[in-house]
Amino acid sequence: MKPQNLLYIISDQHNRDLLGSYGHPMVETPNLDRLAANGTRFTNAYTNCPICVPARASLATGRYVHQIGYWDNAFPYEGQAESWGHQLRGQGHRVDSIGKLHFSRVEDDHGFTEEIEPLHVVDGTGDVLGCIRDNPPSRDKRSEITRAGPGDSTYLQYDLRNADNACRWLAQHQGEEKPWVLFLSFVCPHPPYIAPVDLFECYDLDQIQLLPQSDPDNWPTHPAIDRFRRFFAYHHALSEDIIRKLHAAYYGICTYLDRQIGRVLDILGEFGLSETTRVIYTSDHGDSLGARGLYGKFTMYEESAAVPLIMAGPDVPVGKVVETPVSLVDSCPTIAEAVGADVDFSDQPGQSLWEIANSPDQDRTVFSEYHAVGSKDAIYMLRDRQYKYVHYVNEPPQLFNLVTDPDECRDLVTNPNHQSILHDFDQRLNQILDPAAVNEQAHQDQTECIERNGGETAVRARGAFDNSPVPGEVPAFRVH
Image (cartoon, rainbow, N blue to C red):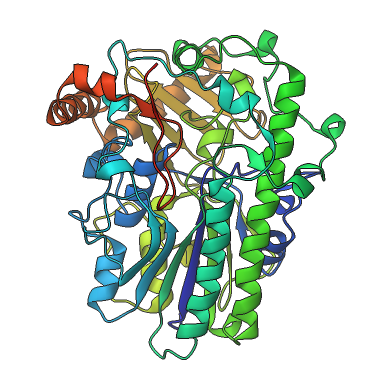
């Protein structure tokens, strides 16, 4: 594979199915759809943790969350575990970032040559309140849903600047000979669910299709899922009108994001860089948008744990759809191979996506885990081409056949015909980690984090903030 430039574009909280190229009948994403038509689209791509900070630390290092100990949004990546950026930069490649990183602080070396207007965690520490997992203070997120609609937000403004910065960056570096990596990270469509007025009005509320098990009568009753609903105050159902308005706002933000990406891709073409630059688009996790009575991320259901993944450019198959399961840890070898860096990833779980894209579909098991806000104990997921297995420490597992039940409405865990499959998945999980021991380690590290930040009383008094502020914005803490 010839070394070429790489533009790695990542968004925040983009539900995989809410793109035209992934089959959504309403959401307008023409630029990403064109990228998919000219390249390869992955149908079974997953985050390695369905919450921002751990997902991004895992992507940076190519290792699972339990291997690096960045458990939740109070454990931001500070550069101690070597990243693909450190390795490529050490071999003379320019590796720059623009936009949201959600790492520790600008003073730390995360592996980039330059970080342009980065969004990092609040105060370099993040959401310490989320470390309280025994009798935690609940977080009423209903207002975030009920406020959804048309308007403006600092996130929309920030992503406009991110696209501006990317266009300027391409103009400045178009003549470089050694292959570079530009890590372009947008914050949309992450809440607040506020879309530009014209884009919100593009979507007819009456035509919006709600996601699986949105009706309270159909909500799954698993104890961990019930706990998430109570914790975020979603257990009292919201009206369909409110949910449809939420969807219209989210659709509008997705279209806004697509427009910013389109601007960058157009500049790439104007400078003649399309022939020498590969492009990847993905997201750090999805958004439930009312499915199962849930909103945001946090769970292992498809709407939360699955991510869009599109690649295009030199040596990328055109118009191909890949069903082989992949995950964000595959980014490390993919990025290194794209620019021709000599890096040994044999001790890491990832595999080059260029190799997977140029091979026939295969069965492969990918892994995700969750140890963060709203959960009592660890949640682990294994996904192969047919099944998804979700292991809840100290609570019942779940098993879904995603070939016959893509909406995950029929849990097969008690089906006598699937007990051998459950046993097989349990064995596969134990080959990756000790579920109970890792859960215990996460709790211990989180307890120590609370103590480092003044103890539980002080952490509770500090409160939480809804969304990480953009550079220059002051976080708004609230005590529930």
